[in-house]
Structure formats: C-alpha cells, structure tokens
Image (cartoon, rainbow, N blue to C red):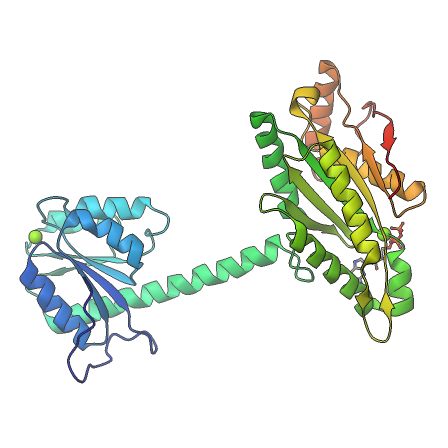
Amino acid sequence: MPAARGPAAPSTELLIGTRAPRIVVVDDEPSILEMMRLRLESMGATVITVLRGADAVPVVRAQSPDILLLDIMMPDMDGFAVIRALKEDEVTRQIPVIFMTARDEVDSRVLGLDLGAHDYVTKPFNTIELVARIRAALRVKALQDELTEKNKMLEQLATSDPLTGLPNRRTFDEQVYTEMERARRNSQPLSCLIFDIDDFKDINDVHGHQAGDEVLRQIGRVLLGRKRRTDLAARYGGEEFVWLLPGANQQAAIELGDWLLRTISEMEVVTTPVSLRVTVSIGVSTYEPEAHGDVPTTALLQHADEALLEAKRTGKARVVFRELSVLPEPMLEELGQTAEAEADDPFAQSPGAPLAGPANLPDS
Ligand code: GH3
Ligand code: MG
Ligand code: MG
C-alpha cells in the first residue's frame, strides 16, 4: 500500500526534527488519495493511503501514524464511525485526526470536532492552509508523545527501586491484593517468601555503603534470573525482599526458599578491595484458598513476616515456614476491619489472631 517514491528534491516542511512524519490518508476517491500522497511526500512525509473506511482502523493500528487525514463521506464506513472506533481504543486514541470534507456543512464539522477530531480541512485543498493545519497537528502529537514518555518515566520511578531494578514495596502491596483475589477465584495456592539479609549493618560498617549496595544489586540479579514470569519479586525495604509465587504450594515455596538460602550463601559478592559473602533469613507462608477460605489480604505477608522473625530469633541463615491460620467467622470479620484500618502497615499484628505454631524446616 505505501509507496516510497517521491520527487527528486523533497522539501522538509513537514519533518519532525529530522524524522519524516507518518501520515495515513483515508478517502474513497482514488484521485484524492493520489494527489494527497504526491503533495505530502513532496514535503517530506511518509504517506500511507487507504481507500476503504473499513480498512482505516486496522491500518492505523498497525502503522501508528503521527496523524490521520480522514474523509467523512465514504460508502462502507464513514469517517464518524472510524473516529469513534479510534477514540475507543487506548492505542489509537492519541493520534490526531484531521477531517477532510468536500461539503461546506457546519453540522458535520461540529460533529467531527465533538467526536474528538483535532481539526478539519475543506476540499478542494488550499495547499498552504493544509500544510499549516498538518503542522499544527504534528506539534500537538509531538508534545503528547513527550508527555507520554515522561509519564512512563515517572511511573517507573514510582513503582520500581533504582538500585536493583526490582519493583518496589508499593507495587508489591498493590499486586498482592490482585494475586490473593486471583488465587481465591481459581482455587490456586499462593505463596510468599520474605527475606532479610543477616547482619547487613555490619557489612556496611566494615566494608562501606558501596559494598552493601553491591550486595543488594547482586541479590536483585539472583531474583530476576530465577523468577517466573508470573512471579513478583520486589525490594520491600532497605535490605528486605519479597517474592510472591502464584500457583506454588507449601512444598514448592519451601524448596524455593532452600534454593535461595543456598544460592545467596554461596554467592561471592565482588567488591574492592574484598569479596564478601552474606546469608539471609527467609520466612515463608502459603495461602490455600480451599483450606483457609477468605482471609484478609494482608494475612499472607503477615504470616511470612512472622516466620522471618522466627528465623532471625532462632539463629538466622535459615528458612522458616508459618502456616496461615484459619479463623472462625466472627474473628475473620474483626480481623478484616483491623486489616483495613491498618492497611498501611501490613506487618501490624492483628489483635486476637491466633497463629498456628511454626513448622520449622530441615536445615539446608
Ligand atoms: P539482622 O541480621 O537482624 O537483619 O541485622 P541487620 O544488621 O541486617 O539489620 P539492621 O536493621 O540492624 O540493619 C539494616 C541495615 O541495612 C542498616 C541500613 O543502613 C542498611 N541499609 C538499608 N538500605 C540500604 C541500602 O540501600 N544500601 C546499603 N548499603 N545499606 C542499606
Ligand atoms: Mg468521500
Ligand atoms: Mg538484616
């Protein structure tokens, strides 16, 4: 469909910096398409022409042009229907649309603008006016793209940890909620590992903060290298990490905890002037929807954290599993309210929640 031929010496009137803008032109009249192609290509644009209204949406989706020039009156699918479809789609919503209409009707212009068109031009075209309007639309598109890019960066900053590149606590707290819901719906287990570097303060004190940072980065790489696509591994706090395992039952989670314990303790962290070794303490808990029913969203992490404290208390460098407690209905309600009130602190101990005894694991 697109043809890359152009006149020998194209002008640069439409260039965005040094980039040729991509323009899709939709019209049911072949002679108009051809004329637009020649004109716009001669000004430095890359032009894709579409003869049928019904083809416009898929072509725009596939080509993601900088702007769309759209005829209104077309037999199979008119321009209004096309713009409606484009505005409904997240991916194509931002692309500025300029309506082209032969008719001098105010009504259809108004409707077009109301449907989200950026502008309109009237056939037959005055070239100078056409170019000015296209340039204005391209400027808007460039600003929008810049804004989208910046928003992406802000989103990245707000949701991930710059040192390790892992998602941060905020992301984890949001995701754990979704994953608990999903586990419940699908009657699938959901496990959680939370671990903390042992005596990390000493490492900073003895070897310096840079060395400590390198330990954190290397642990981040271990997690990124091993985690499954559906897992969520995050840096939860200073030297604390969490790993959420959809589909993993108690046994699978404990095995992974053992693997993590071994891998980290065998890992050599190369820093100048020395290489270091660290150990971690790991707390594990598993939510089995069929056994535990509706528990508060915070319960899984809370029990894993209890297990982590237990691991620290009993000598560090170990994995401890803690069974999620099954609560009678009235207590659940109470706990539900408590969990909501203390949503900011998922570690908050809920009053009156009896916890099952820790099931300690064979040392590895
Ligand atoms: P425990 O075995 O009980 O966990 O003892 P610990 O020394 O690891 O724990 P503590 O809470 O006393 O100290 C944690 C240390 O982690 C203190 C803090 O300065 C350090 N830390 C937190 N965030 C970072 C970081 O981003 N980089 C570095 N280098 N250190 C950090
Ligand atoms: Mg027409
Ligand atoms: Mg620590």
